[in-house]
Amino acid sequence: MNFRNLILTLLPALALSACHAPQAPEIHVIPQPQQITATGGVFKVAGAPVSYEGVDARTAAQIQNFATRLTTVTGKASLVSETLQDKGFSFRTDASLAPEAYTIDIKPAAVQVAASDFNGFFYALQTLGQMLPPAFYGDAKAKADWVLPCAQVNDAPRFGYRGMHMDPSRHFWSVDEVKKYLDVMALYKLNRLHWHLTDDQGWRVEIKKYPKLTEVGSQRKETIVKKNFNPYVGDGQPYGGFYTQDEIREVVAYAADRGITVIPEIDLPGHMLAALAAYPELGCTGGPYDVWTIWGVSEDVLCVGQEKTFEFLEGVLTEIMDLFPSEYIHIGGDESPKVRWENCPRCQARIRALGLRDGNGHTKEQLLQNYVTARMQEFLGKHGRKIIGWDEILEGELAPGATVMSWRGADGGIQAASRGFDVIMTPNSHFYFDYYQSQERDREPFGIGGYVSLEKVYSFDPYDKLSEEAKPHILGAQANLWTEYIATPEHLEYMLLPRMCALSEVQWCQERDYDRFLASLPHTGEILDALGYTWCKYALGTAGMPGDEHPVRTPEEMEKYRSENHWDW
Image (cartoon, rainbow, N blue to C red; front, side, top):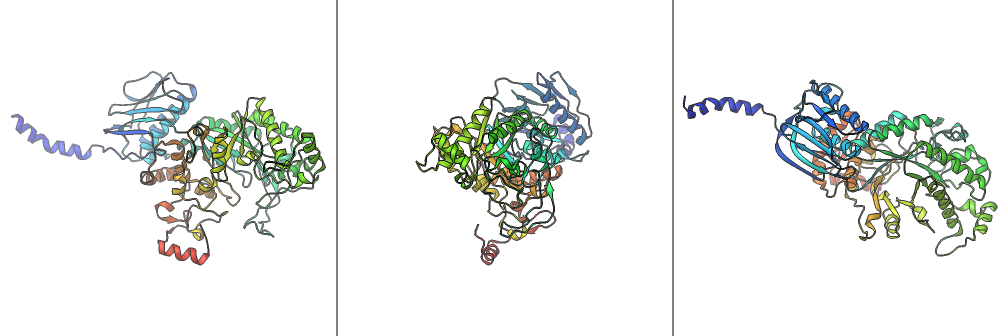
């Protein structure tokens, strides 16, 4: 048989083989890596060995988890070796890479992963997972094209602080629910959980020195179910809950295994009604006080004219530091009314002793709060910790070394960075996830109001309007999810997702493309479905939580709807 006849004979077989050859899937990863280049071809995952060398125990555990997951979903064992292999998946340490950076080189014969630290390896695994079929996140063997598209990935985050806030004070979330929250944060490479543990509506962390904080302060007589009108409408159901110190440690360790640092918030000197209900002698009036059932700002604050208040705060923060290894402790400082201090003889005596006077646009009571902030900052500083406070701590004088969380828009952050303070951008205009995410209010679960769309989240640039000198003070960005009107895990997840996916690209990506992001949403939605999360599909054309979804209105229908309901977004 000559060569020509041989080729003619083989052509049908070659064509049949080509029809069954695995096709390289499209690459959809959120947040989009800084550099990702498809190189053609695929790597077959099923049964691929996994090897690593020179990594720490936490990294080894995550790599082994990855191999176990591959074995489960493909039905073919991915054997693990602690000596690097030339084939399959290999993970090696590259000290030249920056913290949290990683590289992935996917070729038909092997996948090589490199990083310099735990977070870098962990994020590489998240990228690999998202490049696989969504069934990778399921619980059992699944039929799928178990291949990875050949590609080269070079990736590192834009910002070091990539945060998400969680509020168990207004509605309490179990340890398992917190862990599920951490899991989805980790999937999208967020690395800070800001845990709002205390507020007027509930004290949620066990403090052994002050047991009444949880015995009394964690319980309220009922919960408001409608807007903060007077008289409010309550549900008549006692409500409470708190985390034991063992549970706190469990959550902190769980987060650390996912590259996440938990930053606790003990809000002071305002938002302390739950503490005052437990220890009324710490207030200016002496009480009695009740844990609040309504949403808003109480006029009652800690009495900072007496030393026992500072003894209390230092006692609480000492136990908080023992529970949380975080470099930062959030001390709140927001929405602290001054009317009690204005009429409190002890606070006024403290003001006179400190020589505080009205001036430069600030009252002596505002300067008294500066004193409280500085004193807590000094106390925590002696233990190697730093403070974060909401942007109200800028009012008056702020000691060097404090970090400002700018929530009332971005202006506070711009001002703070320009003054040399480190800043985390959390503007309510773009990053308040308790605000409605759909214009279909009548089809959405009842909420606090406002409107922050997916596109609005995506559009924010933490560097906007900042000078080159001020930009290094922007540590990163965070979204806040307050839970006054969010009482179920499904509602919590629905408000979080997919807006947190958009947030992750603001935090991670040097360059962003909203159309590319939207094109990745169906894929990430399949992942969220496989993991059992509830998420909003408004950007994909439906409004309302699962089970109560409706097609979105046309622009003409929306204009009529808004006009009839007098809702100004």
